Amino acid sequence: MKQQSVVCHATLHPGRPPGLRQAVLRAAIAVTMGAAVLPAIATAQTATPPAQQKTQVPGYYRMMVGQLEVTALYDGYIDLDPKILRYTSAREVQSLLARMFVESTPGMQTAVNAYLIHTGSHLVLVDTGAAACFGPTLGRIGENLRAAGYAPEQIDTVLLTHLHGDHACGLAANGKAAFPNATVYVDKADADYWLSEANAAAAPKEAQGLFAMARAAVAPYQAAQRFRPFNGGAGVEPVSGVRAVPANGHTPGHSGYLFTSGKDSLLLWGDIVHSHAVQFRRPQVAIEFDVDSKQAVITRQRILADAAKGRLWVGGAHMPFPGLGHVRRDAAGYAWVPAEFGPIRNDR
Image (cartoon, rainbow, N blue to C red; front, side, top):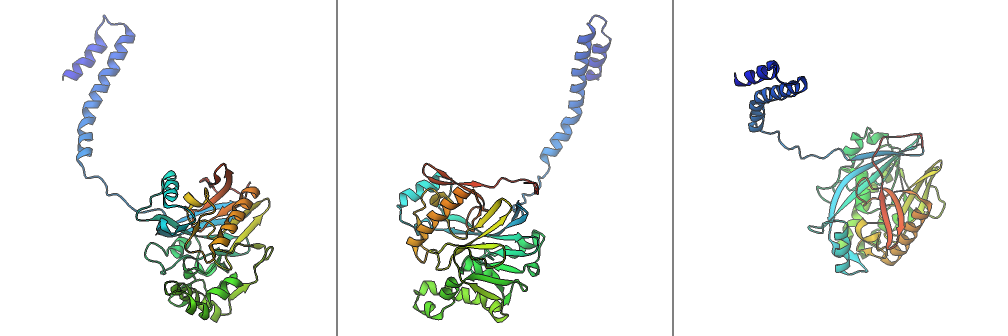
């Protein structure tokens, strides 16, 4: 009743100027409405809030490179101990990690990515993820491939950068081909090294599992005569329109793959970089997994220089997902420029 009398007084008082009467009227109405809303707000605040979802979006990202549809696929992550980085001090590693806000405990979170290229006539998968070879934080390529709108049966070509398990184990599931209609290609030097039982027997005990993983991954494709090692080298095209880029050192036949459409090119470089926080600033830093670490450093320096000079799009298997971007030089080495999220465009 008091609020209503305020409204009436503000409206009817003959001594107030019209503008003042309107201002007082608006204020009085706001007070009246607020009084009605307050109980509802109080009720909403005391209600139980919805549960946090705590789930991530599907692990795929899509962009166009010329007329090529490129889909990055997230396999998961693995925590790597910074101590496996070589040719630098632990103090410098920690400084470089901290500079990029990268946690080192329980380890450097390191993504595992694969890339699906729709050329218009072929569906090409570059690397296949780890499947069940390295624990529960990996093995998501299949589900993310389907989330991206494709099926494993639609892939006709698989290009492996090398035969380490986090790139090749996804080829097989329960002893069968995960991509039943695909032909698999890898540099012959890598196949000769990792598929050799003699090399496996001569390897340190802790490394013998890597050889077994490689053999199991390719076995279904060998049985179906759809495993095709190629003689790598500059200018070699394992499949039409895709050029292999020799990148040995990390493994004997480690290869990148260069896709070109119009004026744009995409280099899928495999394991050139494992730690973006460290190895762009210090390309001379190697990693324990390198078969030939000195050659891996030489290769990394060459690939980074070529990518920066050519302004290439780059996709990295262990770059933060989606691992697509450019490399640029800076005063302290190189820097990573990640792709900017945006709509799919065909007019570039």
